Length: 197
Image: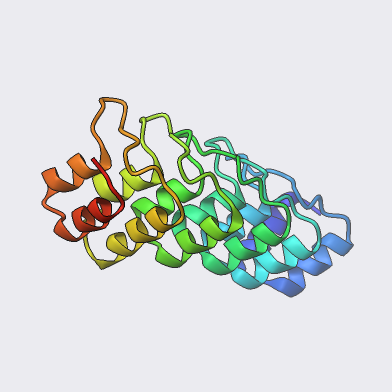
């Protein structure tokens, strides 16, 4: 069986085909032209049943493609919560980083995925990890967020989980200074309560 069949079955969310292909000897972690495994293809499309079948059969949740995405990292970044939780139950590497040097928590915070952020904090991801841009999850939630209710909740979650509210970016600008510059009053209030400077 060619790996393309397994990738195609994952894309279609075709659990029966996935099981048949694996029983027939298809390599579960074989790569396509972009370096993606069938599980990463399933994760791209948020194909929950296909992802479950592959993970249950032993697919590597940390296998990275050519741009350093893995099923775990991609599910976190995109807020694919069901698949993220499955990867966490099956050995997700909380220290693994994407092509920007960030953990799954950083893009989840930036994109406003509240439940994903909550899940990753509970899993024990390093809250103060700094990516290649010099930003933490807290900084990304403020700098790249829109200051709305989701980003307010995320800032609150990060602060309550012990994020360093005074950890500045690479240019020495603090989360509070970024929040003030953007006019995000609610986020500014959360940070001030947490003794941000």
